[in-house]
Image (cartoon, rainbow, N blue to C red):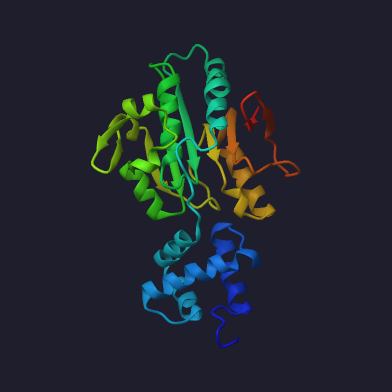
Length: 273
């Protein structure tokens, strides 16, 4: 290893394999610099001097391994991100749920926001469901992520003024309290969401889900890991349920049973059995 080289090719290979095996995230040479940057931060935090020492630590310490995986994930999000998906949710999916659950006066809609980051996505979904589902219907949202830091932020439900951009004014008035420095999500919306740590490489334990959002997550996986995640989604989703992935992601050419749906607002997938 050159004197000024922080991470040797061999060490990079070891970290890349560990990250892939533990999370499904696929690091390539093009995003090696991101890994190196995060590693330097963790070494400073733990008072260590070499990537080899830290590798030894995370292979023995499960909690520190979680912290490391947390540090390498990208948590870019905002309220109603890719608004077309929420238009499709309101104007296509909700009416379809009416039809599917016709005659059920106290239906319960089960939703999973996988890779929820700091909570903007599940809170956006919750506000929309509160607006457009019948008052007698119930809904519940599980919001999961591999980043404990992001989950704790989402659980608090507090967002500074700049982060409220994108939320309709009527929703801000109805579903947030104005507090010092920003806005606090109201308890009636917070109570609809359960934030939970989850690694998509493993079974979530969820079942009979009506809607799954997993946007801008599988783009970091290679194809075998993507197929494995989609298989797990299929197994936990109810018949005639709906799957939203990121606008730059696609299941085309992938070995899955999901059907592609194109609407006037956005494209997504459904389990139609």
